[in-house]
Length: 249
Image 1: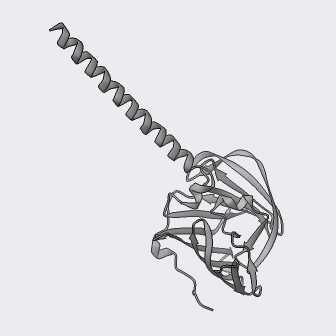
Image 2 (image 1 turned 90 degrees about the vertical axis):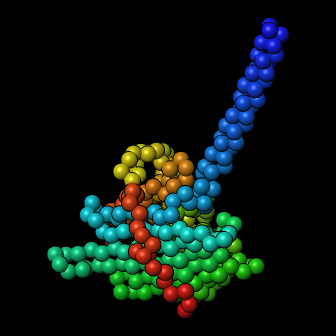
Image 3 (image 1 turned 30 degrees about the horizontal axis):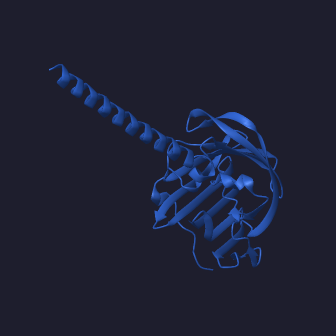
């Protein structure tokens, strides 16, 4: 009887050890998976289907900036809709509309189409990936952009690693300097979160905030003598709210 108890005890101990090793290995896998999804990679593989910002001008609501993500096979499709409007009494004194359609593959931009109406002045751009780089046609002319170029759509935090960006409104390459400016608490979908701030200067002047996980949390800049702030919202738009620009020019 005592021998049987010793055997059963030894078997139970081995079973507990095997379970401990199993859960330890699962924990390591989970931790490694979490590390793999931090920083720029997480933004390159968005967790959410949509991102929505409310845009404010000197504290008054100016409009919205919405981003829809969709996956098709190995490609990431991104549709962006920006609608801004300034009213004086019942009259519209300024309006801005921008539609942007992007296709990403293996972390690189392979196609982009944009249309912009900046208070009556229109712009367009079309870019396609080639073996030499991204060939861009549009209002800014025709040129070859680097294969790893980042557009000024900002949802990907790899943007802050770049010194040259593709201006999605005017269809041109712009030179910028982007420097870290500390960690701040910002409102993110109604909740305070810690976010890294980056200041951009050069052809564009603005500030960008990204959470520790790489999510675009906030933007601010000066425009026509007013302060413009992007505030991240908790509610996402529906697919029907975001249409695609014309794909061919």
